[in-house]
Length: 386
Image (cartoon, rainbow, N blue to C red):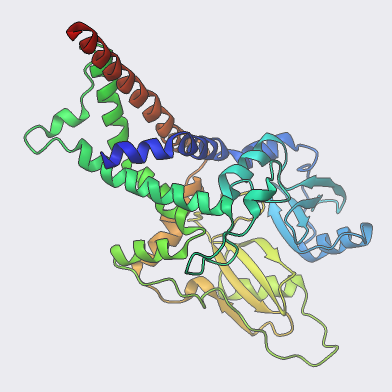
């Protein structure tokens, strides 16, 4: 009964969320393919660096305030603090290819729907009333919680409940365990769709559970802490992603982007993928580690290792991901969370993620089919008795 009512409550909202997420698995590849001129680049033995790209854009467009620089698809992107627009610079020639929105078109709408609950003001599909803060009901919501994000949290938690209750409903017992994986194709529509519903549900349980936990945790940190407690981890350290720059004398020049990148690479080898310049008193450098890169497929904001560098002191750094933590925490950050977006694997393997992401749609169709069959059978029995 709990499983049935959970499914009914989720209904169309769950299908919209998961189906949009399945499509967004290929958002980076789609964006690069549909912005060919933006990603035009020239091979060079001496390409320009992040600092030069930032300075080129600032000089050509003084009205634009660069806040981050990213290496993506062969170009250097220079973006604003709102993460709404970016300029592309060809590192081989130093020419500006043009300007483009970070999110646009149908994919931009799906990002707003899936990631923001239609509350990202700079993306297509923004709905102002969903962005209104959720009023307090006796306890404080996490900072920034609005109606759209609350809906996403509820959907994530209900997905967890759906996965757990689905296992309970499906469990056929040890003696009939194999029956849980059969599909009776010759026993009529009801038997076929009933078996398909059970099979799809149990096969996708690990993914539904993963999507539910990580989806809720993005906006409800206690969900992550609860999962870590269950799996033997420790509560997330709220100070892990904090950094305080050392006091600097007035007029002291900043070290600059290139020196900040070099300071970060000195403590964490790899490739700088993304660097934020707009932090108060420090730079945030995102580095893609050699070999294993769980966030390697992400457009613009790739990298799996974060290093903070003091804007005035390159020796004052904080290697965020080098801080000791339980294995369950490391697994969550390096496997569980990037698996949510499919960034854990390349585009071909993401086809598996795409198929599994369509599972709620298949579950809705097979569940609706069996429900309609049962309802029709009940009506026919009532008519026969009349």
